[in-house]
Image 1 (tube, rainbow, N blue to C red):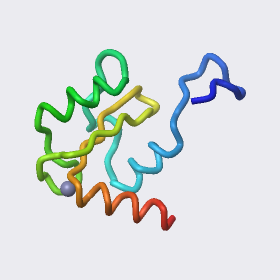
Image 2 (image 1 turned 120 degrees about the vertical axis):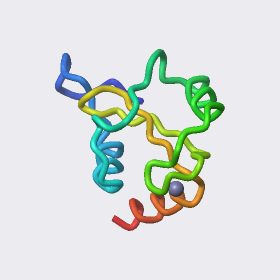
Image 3 (image 1 turned 30 degrees about the vertical axis):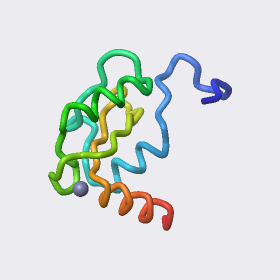
Length: 92
Ligand SMILES: [Zn+2]
């Protein structure tokens, strides 16, 4: 969460999130934009309103906020896809 670095004035893109999007083969335009502050309460709210897993369509149990070039977007995943994503992205 450091604000250091160059590129002031340009929206900061979370490279991990961009990698996740590529890994999931989804485009930021297809994801729901995050409205309001991107805090833990937003994630709790998101999880309280069942959304389908991006990968398999099951009820999502995990929600990530991905900082994309289009702004913050929701990444909804079920437990197994979350584990798949963690394992896969960790493996490179
Ligand atoms: Zn899933």
